[in-house]
Image 1 (cartoon, rainbow, N blue to C red):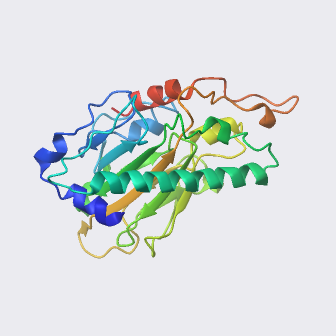
Image 2: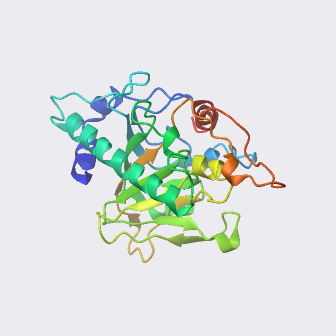
Image 3: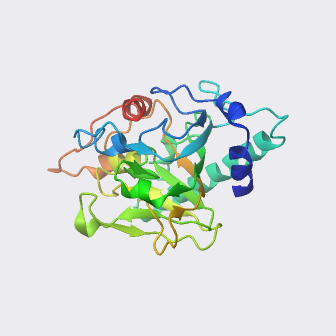
Length: 282
């Protein structure tokens, strides 16, 4: 997978721009160049409703694909002339990760003593809204990140149910919020010694379904600990965003709202919620 990741980002810029995501609130498809997405707004502007300086930017580019069966938002694919075999490989990887995510969600239903299908009935193969992303963080001078206006990716929550993340094993920097100090003030690093290791991250939809019982993981990509030199090396990662069906209700489920408890998350269709959140990032 990481080999395909690197091959895509080695394509000529013109080839990548030919399949560029147009921005806006629709699900992301194709190539997004460095600076096209602003992750700083997803958390601070989108959730905290606080002002975000306009000069903050991400030092990251990515390729996004939807389910092979998704006809509503088809993936923008690179030419087979320039990247033969890329599409079938990616579609096969998507199917494998879809099955893996379903196994995890089924296990979670059992662990929480829920009726089978409590989560999975809203994450179906037929209506699959999940996405697979290839991330590339180009090498960057340390001074740019230390300036405070640039980050590889700013603190944010993922929008789906869970995220399955794979790092390339060569350059870390992934950090998750230390929940003993809520507020995005302290982060703990997640090392990546093996590219086959999978990080499973709770995302916003699962937090909403469980009425906050399972909290989404606030995370960012920072300068790797112990870095020597003045340049942060390039970094690659792969993320599978398991998402609820677009028409699924992602308000708090009744199983997580006991008598007298506050219902923290009201009903809203998944696609409407995601469009609202994505609008703040483009």
